[in-house]
Amino acid sequence: MIGSLDRPGLMVLVGVTHTDSPTLAEKLADKVWTLRILEGELSAADVDAPLLVVSQFTLYADTRKGRRPSWSAAAPRPLSEPLVEAFVAALRARGATVATGEFGADMQVTLVNDGPVTLILDVDA
Image 1 (cartoon, rainbow, N blue to C red):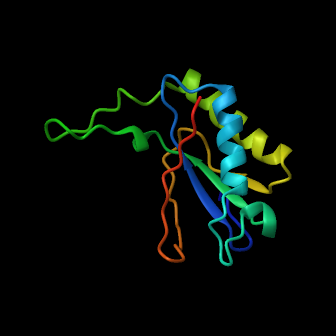
Image 2: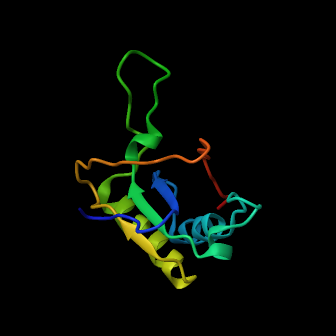
């Protein structure tokens, strides 16, 4: 097993597109760490919740045309892998406990979703 959490926390699926940057990764890390989405309107930072970060290029799937998704909006590995690493580093710099998957691997990911709550987060460049 590559990454797992030993207590309740957040699973963060991260997609990277061509226009993303290290600055954007920093801003997104701050938002994820301080977003008040846990019980009692608390953030992961407030309760020291661990994070499992998994790169997920499929978040940029375009299914508007035809019957096969297009992945053209997803950044290639040479751009996306360093940005996912920068995102993880920014979380750790804020004091977060972060586990990760293996970049680009075919992973079996298990999630117990409390809620269910799934949010798509974005930040301005």
